[in-house]
Image 1 (cartoon, rainbow, N blue to C red):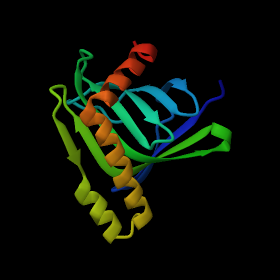
Image 2 (cartoon, rainbow, N blue to C red):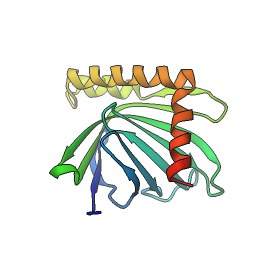
Image 3 (tube, rainbow, N blue to C red):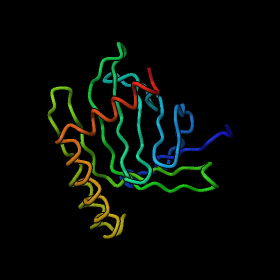
Length: 160
């Protein structure tokens, strides 16, 4: 397979980071499954897997410690730009994030960043509306238990 480039784009702080070093384990029109190490060494986690729903606009990462125990699932609300005939992906962080703890606790994060990004015109109102709608759809799947079950099934097929 030809090398695929992946970039993570953030508005706060404004940056575009090449994460093409992540190992692509599976890719089709709907999903991308990757294995990765933290960009910068960290004490709170050591490894992860991510499943990006390319059309739905979210990325769920299984964040693990060095013993490969789940610390939490981190859910990014994103917009995906595919370019160069599928050889380049830009994962644009739409600021809202959700953390799902192993005990089932759900923490919605960065709503203040979304408000600031709209006020500072870092993102458009349309992007903010998109983020809220995508987060709502994803949260419904998280609260039902369906999303974490699905992502764990995907990871068991491609990551273990």
